[in-house]
Image (cartoon, rainbow, N blue to C red; front, side, top):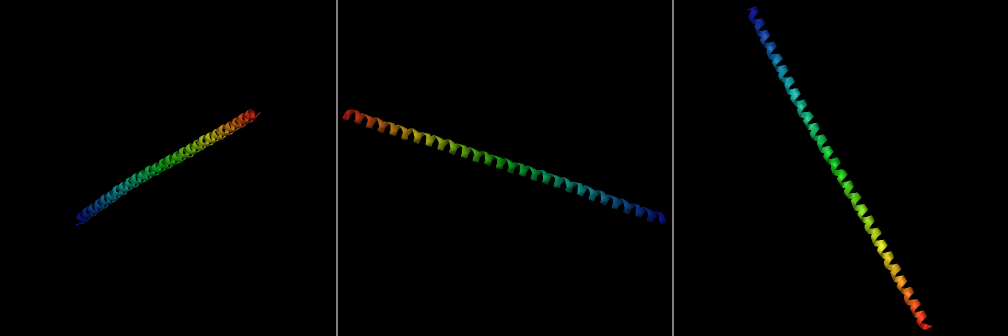
Length: 100
């Protein structure tokens, strides 16, 4: 009878050990899933940072293009004004010479 009780106790201990092993495996699987989730979150963060960098580059391109366009427009306006002034001066000089 005592032997049977000891065998039963041993069987119970083995079942408990198996249950603990199963629990440990489940915990390891959960940690792996958590690690995978953190990796995906990190990849998402890197993607967002890349998108932000792209937006900053586009903004820089827009500002640079606007500055170049403004410079060209100002230069052209100055040239037209100077040419008009020179033409007016030439016309005035010609009229004065013709009046003499």
